[in-house]
Image (cartoon, rainbow, N blue to C red; front, top):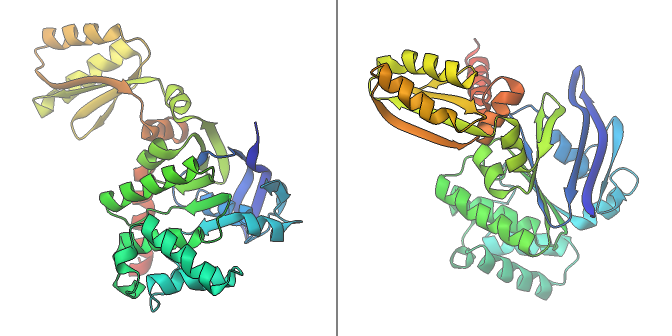
Length: 327
């Protein structure tokens, strides 16, 4: 097995803040490695180290077989990078943006224009090629930004939260593009706080929280870690959720979670489900929804950190708003 990305013991300080606290990760050649975690976990710092934008304080990393510190110039010849926000020049047209990148990479003008046309067609931007990027929608700008990172035909692509702020349709379109890249043999490191995104795209996942790797494995392996399967029960009468939670807790041996009237708990033995149905019937509880499914990556995150990823994000957003308001 060959690895396009290898990192061991990465540590990075920003003043008193320890952004990375001994991060290890590997990405198999031609695969998608999902780096998952809330804002502030260390995802972007990891990408910046691997993309040679900053140097680690401790540890080492190799990208494409080259050391990111000693052979930074060689690493840069192999990689592409798309950050959290579109980096295109809004005053230039789609074609002009891509031709400019091509020329900066050393392509002849004709080569740059040919590559630009190829990428604009691939990303379904041909009809907008002569329009200024400032007239593009958010999804179009993200596609143009991703196209710009591919002008140099990188072997390894870093996507740092590429779908932030996009609507579901635009996000799905970018997912299809990422799948196509790996089909072409490109190795992708994808950072995201969207659990569904990691589940859809990643061959392997590394979960980072507070600068440390707290779990790694395939999506299915991580789901198994969180209990394998989840039992979900939604009573018709909202007030019955207390009774449902008590019964589910007694029979599963786990502490149920109640969110929006839905009672859920990890279930290691599917044979328990009929017993739950019988007990609910005996208690006179009418069930509106009953299901058994695999654990989600959000439940994996909860099992590992004690909080849901979206709860972490909501808390950080609230804190940011308080700072803006001077609270």
